[in-house]
Amino acid sequence: MRVLICSVFLVLTGAASGQPTTATKTDSGWVPLFNGTDFSGLYDYVSNSGTVDVKTQTNFTVEPGGIIHVKGNPGGYLGTIRQYSHYRVRVDYQWPVGTAGDANSGLLIHLDSAAIFSGFKSAGRPRSIEVNCRRDTDFPWSLWSANGLGPFITTKVTAVPGSGKAGQYNPAGVEWTDNPYGTSNSRVITGDFQRNPELPLGQWNHGEAHLYGDSGVFTLNGQVRTWGRNFSLGSSGSSPASRVACTRGNIGLQSEGYPISFRNYEIMELDSITYAPINARKGCTTQSSGNYDPRAVVDNGTCSGTALMRREGGRLRFLSNDRFGTWLAFPEGSSRVQLFDLSGHSLGTYRGESGGLRLPASAPRGVLAARFLP
Image (cartoon, rainbow, N blue to C red; front, side, top):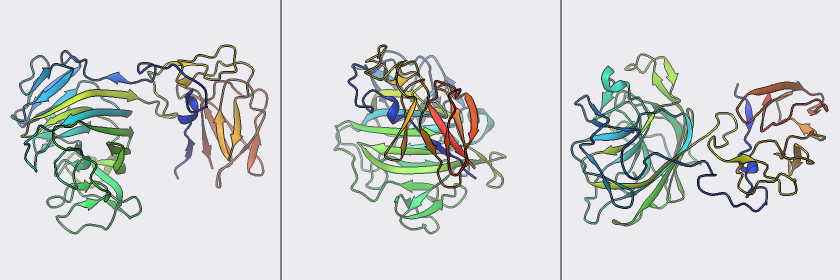
């Protein structure tokens, strides 16, 4: 049984609480994956050669203005040395004028860099999920698993596709799990049935991928193109039977036969429980408090003279580190609540009666998330 997590990311920002803020881009928790001058922290992989180069990139060059130019050949990708699990990654991409209609590239997520040497690679890359940049009505910012390797992706589609067909993402459709071990294209989840939001050649598109362990939401130019959950791999690496969760990996920019440019390549790491940005500026976000920090993005529970939590329209709003002083109603099927601090550490579990709970004055402070339990 899945527990219900009360995500409080939106109410932890100064803007969301209606308070003025002077937070900068750095304060928000966004960190560059590319520093604009060299490829520190990244490595270059050349398809099927087993070649990994952390010093000189044979297929990627730095252009003025902090732009990564991809030659397209040889195929491969520019990957992060670090792995990530819960995060938001964003990047702008531009196809040059005159690019062919079937040009291809992508953002690789949950990439298994160790598979470069273990043999679990297909179509020129290790097992991973490709967020596709392919120039085609259905494909921009779609999902593509490595053929015969996975991961499996569960989503909703307009109709369950037949053999050799791609599933079209539709949030109002039917649930379907792709089969990366099936026939050609059965491992593809195409973009939403909405109008393709990709901009004309020569213009910059803005893509984002929001990953929460084994699930993710993928947007292009502000439109949700795909959504998936229960990412999983064959436990033996090459067998579809007995799956294990796919929750983390490296991130890469793909080279797939055509020139393309990328810029503004950034990541926001998220706390795995609260989903608050880990690298964001933390402080008091309540303007009425004497220690209000107008640059703070995440409230760290240091405000004075305010309630920790209050109900607003049936929701829980966390404000500071003071006492609760309010009635906490449980969702249907729940009878306990577990509290967590900003670091994701449990602060204790409390059981209520008759569907609710008034926490005692001795309740811990600095609470930033609540998880309801049966």
